[in-house]
Image 1: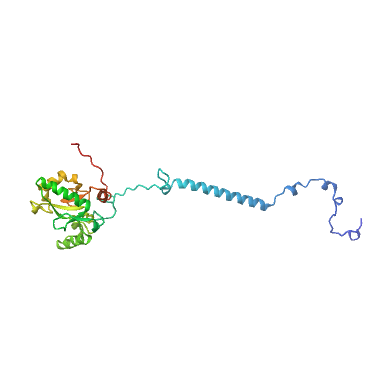
Image 2: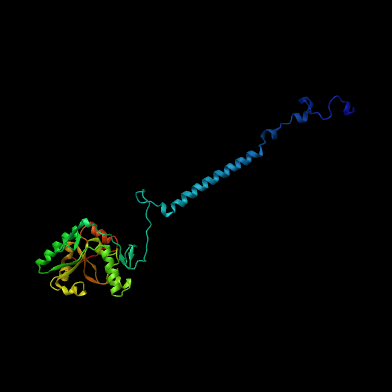
Length: 275
């Protein structure tokens, strides 16, 4: 055997042609080298699949949760989100108006331009529609021998402030005590221009007194005021807890006056026996 140092080929050289590879190795197909996939490809494929699965799962969760969210509910038309119903029983007066003080509801002050006189001296005023109906009611009552006298009509917030705090101080009344007989400023029906205090011209001693209920004027109003769009604001045991005021009437004979008072209160229709 020849020494590798003198064989004519470098000791560490590789075969240069197929003839130098043994037949058994040369005829075996190199399948592994052709089908082998680089590990990085598998990693990338797995990562892509995971991302796709996460996206699909998130989309399904979004659709499911959105159907169960109250804010996403729609009205029958499908265009306006439906409002959630509430059952707030915290208001003791039985109304849905949360803007109240000592069970008196808040009312806006009427515009001076829409006020008309209902007294001879022009000092007592009401909103135009209410003033017209009051004058008709007063005339009809007069035909029946009843004298309806307006005692007080529209009142500004400043005037109500004097009545509430000024007289309350004179009588040593707390706000809660005063609220039983007078509304706080900003919370009086007189601000609206639709309320009026009525007396009997034949018995003025009953003015602004519960004794007014015994007069012909009050009896006539009970029987006929609704024909002219007027109703008693604070009857006995009224839900607002305000003292009984048989002299205090309000006009509810048109849309604006009706909404002014009835939108602020949870009052249901009442059935009356047919006559």
